[in-house]
Amino acid sequence: MIKSELVQRIADQNTHLYQRDIENIVSAILDEIVKALERGDRVELRGFGAFSRKARSARVGRNPRTGDAVEVEEKFVPVFKTGKELRLRLNGKGG
Image 1 (cartoon, helix red, strand yellow):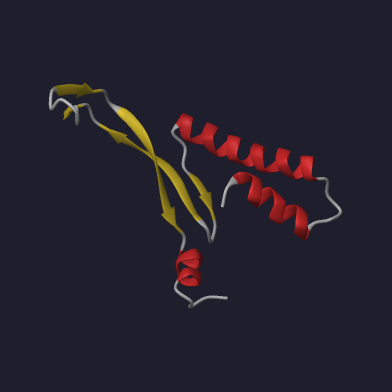
Image 2: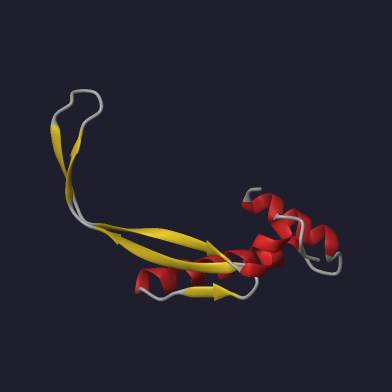
C-alpha cells in the first residue's frame, strides 16, 4: 500500500472528513516520525511497532561493476520492530 491508497481508505471510512485534511494528517504523522528519528528518538506506536535508527559504521565496500574498493561512510538506517499485537494478527491469532 502506498500513501495515497492509505489516504483513500481512510477517506472511504470517514466520509465526513475532506480528503485533503486526511492527506495533511497522514503527512504530519509521517513527518513527525521522520523528525524524531533524525533527532535520534525512538517512536513507539503501541500494538503496531517501534521505529528507531541504527548506526552503520564506516567500512570498505566494493563497486559491483568494477570490483574496486570503495570507502563507505558511517550512516544511520531506519529500523522497525513489530509490536506484539501486530505479530499476533499477522499470524491469525489475534482479533
